[in-house]
Image (tube, rainbow, N blue to C red; front, side, top):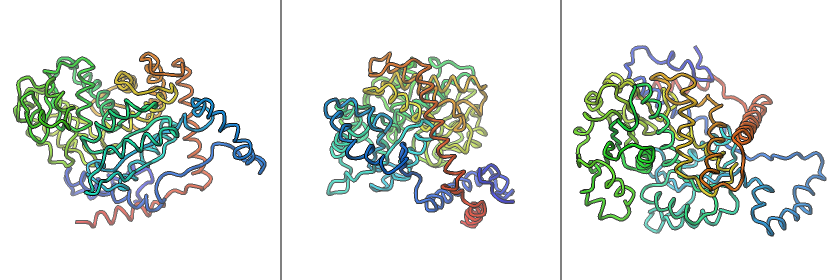
Amino acid sequence: MKLKLDLSNLSELLPPHLNDRQRADLQTRFLKNLSIEMHRYYGGKMQTLPKVGIWSSSWFNIWYTPGVSRVSTTIRDDHETSFDLSNRGNLVAIVSDSSRVLGDGDCTSSGGLGVMEGKALLMKYLGGVDAVSLCIDNRDPTGAPCPEKLIQFVRMIEPSFGAVNLEDISQPNCYRVLDELQQTCRIPVWHDDAQGTACVTLAGLLNALKVTGKELCAVKVVLLGSGAANSTVAKLLLKSGMPGCNITIFNSGGGLHRDRSDISSNPKFYRQWELCQLTNPDKITAIEDALPKADVLIALSKPGPDTIKPCWIASMRPSAIVFACANPVPEIYPYAAKEAGAAVVATGRSDFPNQINNSLGFPGILKGTLMARAARITDEMAICAAHTIAAFAARRGLHPDYIVPNMEDYDVFPEIAASVCVQAQKDGVAKKILTYDQAYQLAKNGIISAQNSLNALEENGLIQAPHEDLLKQVLEETLKEK
């Protein structure tokens, strides 16, 4: 049997004698091996193509000199026209110093290119948004990332883009860079690892609570990890009405609470110190003591299937909800979490049910932001997107293995875009006024155009599919690995 191009029969080709853990590990290794081969095969994921026609050589006089002189002087006299007379109005800069790429840590300045190109691909295909991957070298003489250089870089490129997506920046630099740029840039600056992940996590939690018959304001939540993602998850939960006394956050030093002097004495960790004041009033220090009182465990921490112990989940309240969202390997595999008693399990991966990943949010959120020509992305816009995502899945019919749309539910993205566009107007940060229907249709048309363009390249042989025998070869080599 050959491995299908859509990989739908992968499980059928795995050795039948493997247990669940071995199958999950093998699947992870295969996806990594196939990824490196496919990136080598195509030379990356993105290319640049024009959006205008060249009907004769005379059109170079229109698109370039002398005609384009009028464009330059018009923008000179009114900078806002740059959004209409160039691609700036639909263009995002994906900026990273690659200091914390997925769960792989510091990958050096160019190491994040694969992830940044992946985000650009998803923005285009799912949101109709153009994006450029910009991995920069902001290291000081000691090799440490310098946040000032990153801030200065984004300020310098601002005139060319409609929005900036920060990505894979280590903490605490990610907080400082985001806060500084949000205050000083005239275009929205979005930290997707934090804000995007938190948005989709909130969406998934809203529906997981519906599946288990629980209420947001009544459940107890444990957050494992206090990095950019979970810090922002806590922030959105608090803004959504969850009492701080119902939230307990853990990092490598134990539970966050108001007596954590190691956090209060370090100004770099001001975000965590704020959460120390707002959560865990009982000053619980060990996660083993918090989980027996918890309904929900949200982990955005150390990758690896042994980070969360099954006995932790077994100790939780009935109908427990477990989000194990570390990438590229969840803190516990779904089968193990369910065996331990979890009613609803989610991870950050699309090859398991319930993918809680920022990829479900940022294409639509950024499209809506660009359509509104918003000055920034507010928390209310992110929360609005979360409710839109949750409502879309609820209309499809919720069950334990479907709490958020999957990556093939393409219709959710124009809904997110339209909702965010309208919310930006309500929040007073929009420069363009569109109705929901106008925004929805504009986003829908852009997404259809992007997908049809890619389909046309495939159908005309300009993008050739890899041969299925190559996929099988990668699988066979993976099976031989020890």
